[in-house]
Image 1: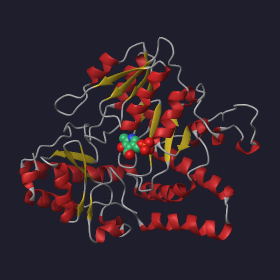
Image 2 (image 1 turned 120 degrees about the horizontal axis):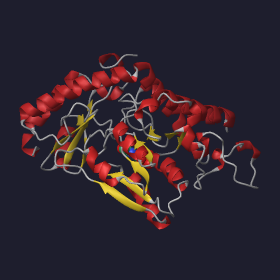
Image 3 (image 1 turned 180 degrees about the horizontal axis):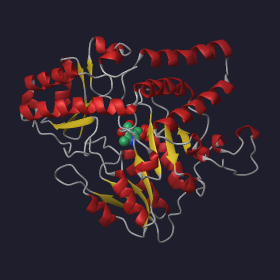
Image 4 (image 1 turned 135 degrees about the horizontal axis):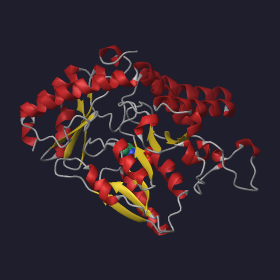
Length: 380
Ligand SMILES: Cc1ncc(COP(=O)(O)O)c(C=O)c1O
């Protein structure tokens, strides 16, 4: 199904509301609702459908892999970014000379907090800050990364400002110093084309709640094979074992593939809607979604300039994606005022967040701009 007007009928919310909050959660489609109901119906009719659940878990792995152009064997199915990243860092030796974790100012809290938790294991955390224009200059990463760096975390798109890190360039810096590079891509996957063969990062993670149109409780972590096969996560679970159904308690024998970063019982209720959401995205095709959203975001930015609004998102060619942040005098009141106009947005810091996706159309952008003009006293 193609993007824009063609797909809107799948998403009932657009009958009455302009939904511009996919950076928090994607809108609910009929197809994802039906998939969630299928899980309940199967439970009702058949009880525990273990074989089917394991098959759905593998379907999710394959769908994630296809989205990032990876082999399913290099993809872990996780319950969250937190679970995957925790498993990853649990496999890093942080007790010696190479004990530093570099994080960008734009990391999601879970990445920053997991990094700081490693201080208990001997790690040192180095934070790379942004400049006044909302960018994180490459030189700041270059200064922070050295031969003591074990891990560099550079979120692909910031949930906070909409800024896109240049993951490939940062990965090059990290690799030159022998560090592992992690790109938390939750705010990118499904909206921007991601290809692990060229992205540069060694580990790429995300989940289904936002631009993948599914529910909470399902995520993924791709790990470069040459790295993954050398790592032994100490945060683990029985679904990470080389043979789940052997049910052995005699040893730790992690799976040879990235399944070693899986954990316990798969997030069964989230698998159904997650796979359905990813199917919708795959059918619409990410490059087409990206081009469509770019047109809408550029229309929005032009309108914001006309309004004299202060845009917090950096505006260089590769600096922004589907999320635009606008500085507000009182962001919560502005979100409420827009909700009163039946427009759904959200806030972070002093900013209003407006995020656009495959189902948005030019009329949505124009309605958002008209509402912002009406409430322009709340714009900084
Ligand atoms: C960039 C980013 N990373 C991670 C998350 C979520 O992490 P988790 O799956 O651990 O809840 C979000 C949003 O919820 C996010 O925006």
